[in-house]
Length: 409
Image 1 (tube, rainbow, N blue to C red):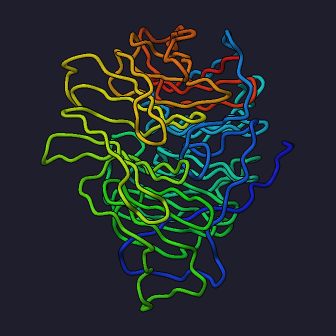
Image 2: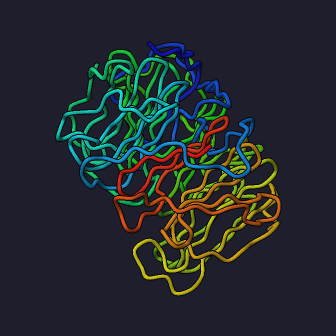
């Protein structure tokens, strides 16, 4: 048996469309209880900061263990760490699309046997693993046994290979799944659909307020009464107009940060809105680039700008930038990454990307100086990059593009 704490309050996501289903009276957006020894959501917390600020990380870590699947799989995009387990999800391969590993040894505790169950996002509850497919359903599994508790039995109408265009948030009671086409709220215990909103579903939650969107950000407060089919739409507190979609909203220091693609202008932007009123406070624009969602480290937001965009051959070096809350650039360095994954813990920024860019690096968030670099390929593949990261007390967990899960400590 595993010792697991309950995850407390928080979660939801919303939009500008008719509500289908019912939202129970008194339901509210809250705050997820986080701790330095777990990483339960892709963005660590409901604000999508990707930063485990109170964790202690080693200065010069060594590989502890590695899980290697029996056959090649697509990259590990879903990754979560509990008190006793590491949970990883891949978008391909019947045997390892979802695997739960013993945290100390890497031994397989259980894995899915459903050949149709590919996984792009994971949320980890106290007793349940929630997995979202890139093009199919959401499912809930018993964390201890692997038994499937429920699934929604639906296929999504859209599929994207762009990182982090989906969200899966869990507040201890309600599961919120956002895709490019909808935001759906499920009862975490039964899987019953509470409500669904059409439109882009990427979202973040801060206290009793939910922020939805990317280039267009809409803010909502917790509803105070039941909402059912035929009721009026949820009234936004504010909406900031824009166009194009790309990354998740990130809530930081009274601001909502969004990275957005403006395809008709051939540019991408990182922009900051006032969380209370929706006023645009500052923006950074980058032509013909790919801009990642920022990671929040202390008083800096750190993000990467890849030259050439997502599917294009890079036409120059990338740039890693740190900005303060007012949008002023604190530092910037050139990189070989195009679309790295970023996460932070204990005052260290971790970046993973293409095999020779390097695949994994630890960076000082105050200066941009690289502390150390690692390769993540293992013995069974010639080249491999990092595709997902999670950092907890004393342990850095990395998912790779070949389905490996590697821990450093």
